[in-house]
Image 1 (cartoon, rainbow, N blue to C red):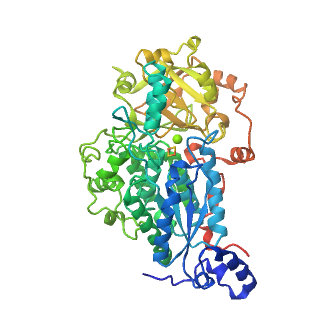
Image 2: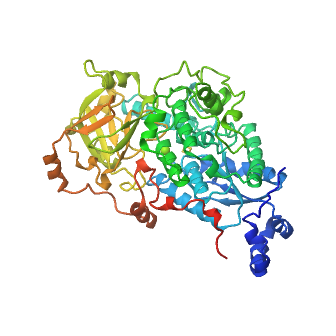
Image 3: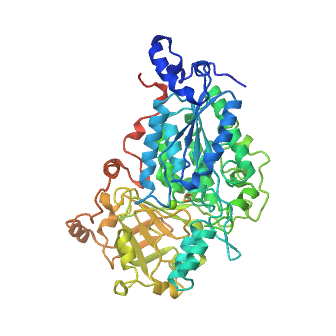
Length: 589
Ligand code: FES
Ligand code: MG
C-alpha cells in the first residue's frame, strides 16, 4: 500500500512541536474510542465518515450499520476512521421542502471538513439531497472524498404488481381522483412500495443522484445500484473504506475528478437512465462549487439527443433490483462508451479511467438495459425552453406518454406547437383548494400554471409542478394537462411538466404576470414558451407587484431567501462558490 509522502493536514492538529499545548488539547479527548496518541501523531490518514443515516433520514438508515464495514476497510488500509453526523434531510417529511435544507447540509459539512483534522472523507449518501449536498461540500473543501451510496430498497409489490417509490403515489392519486380506488387501497399500495431499508427504488432523485456520483467518477464502480439489503452492499462499504485511505495516500482530490468533461458525461448518463429532473439543479450546483462552467444549454446540447436505455420506473417498467442485476449504472455507461457518447479517458476515484472501470460491464439483461441501437425512447433528454415567461425551464421528454404526445405534440398541421389557456395558482395550497372548482373552466385545452414555488418563493423550491387535472377530467380519461411552474417535480413523477422556470415569480419572472385565461404558446420544436399578451398590458399588470409569498418562518428561511440563486444556476447560496479548494489553507489554532 502506498504511504503518504507529504505531511497530512491532520498533523497540523496532532503533531505540531511548536504548539505542544494545543497538540495536547487536540489529542486528549479522542482517546475514548480506541485511538492512541501514537497513532494520531504518526501521520496515519484520518478518514471522516459523514454519516447521513438516522431515524430522521430513514432512506439512509442502512448507513448506521454499513459504517462498521467502512471502518474495517479504513483500518485495514492503515487509516483512522472518525464518524460524524450530517444535517438530516428526509425528502418525504421535511417541510416546507427538503430542498431548503440541501444548502444548509452543504454549509454544515463544509465547516466540518474544513475545521476538523480530517484528511479524507467517505460521503454516505442515499435520499435525494444527501448526495448533492455532500459532493458540493467535498468540492468546496477539496479533500480526497469518495461516495458510498446506501442503495435502493428492494422492489415493491402490491396485488401481484411492481409498485415503485413515489411513482405509485402519483399513479394512485389519479386513480383515487377518478374514483377507481379508496383511501385504504391507496395506503396499501404506498406501503407495498417500501419493503425494506434503502432509498427510493424507482429512478427518482435518490437513485439518480447516486448514479450521478458514480457517473462523475466519485464512487467505486457499481456502487450506486446495489440494493441496500444485498450482501454486495456491505462489501462495497468495505472496499470504499479501503479506497478512501488510498485516495489520501495518492492525494486524489475531487477537483481532479469533477471536471467539466465529467459533468457532461453525467448529463448524458442521466438521459440514458431516464433520470430525475432534479439532476439539473443539483448538477449545476455541484459544478458551481467545483468551479466548473456548466451552462443551462449544456443540458440540451449534450443530453437531449441521448436515448433512454434503462427500462426503470418512472420512465419505464422495472425497479432497482432488476436494474442492479442487469448491470446497473456501469452497464448504462458501457453502452454509451461503445456508442462514443461519453469520455472514457477521465480519471475516477478508483484510480482508473472511466473506460478501464467499464471493462466487462456489459448489460446482463437486455430487457432492462437496452442496447444503444434499440432504445426505449429516442432523444430522451431534457428539452430546454425559454421565452417571455422565463429565461430557462426544462421538460423531461422520456416520461411523456403516447397519449400526451398525440394530444399536444402531434396536432396535425402544426406539429410541436401548442396553445392553451392558462389557469394559474399561487402556491400549492391554492391549487389543492381550487383545482376542482368548476368556475375555473379547466378543460382539455388548459395549461395549469403554478408560481410562488421557486427557491425564494416557497422557499426552497417545491415539487408541486406535476399538478394533476381536476377529478372531472380524470374521470373522462384525461390523465395529464401541460403544466408550467417555477418549482420542481418529484423525480419519481411521470408528468409532462415544464419545470424550474427561472427567474421565478417571486424574483419578478414572467410567471408573476400571468392571469387566468391568458393564452400561452409552447413551441416544442424551437424550445420556446411565450405568453401571448402584449407589452402594454404586461406593463400595466406589473404595477400590481409580484404575487405575495408566505412570510419567513425560521431564521434559515430568511437567510436562504436573501442569498439563494435560481434553479437555472443550481439554487446555491450566492457567493459560496467563491470559496474553492479551501483545504489548501488549514484553519487557525
Ligand atoms: Fe428518501 Fe426517496 S424519499 S429516497
Ligand atoms: Mg422529491
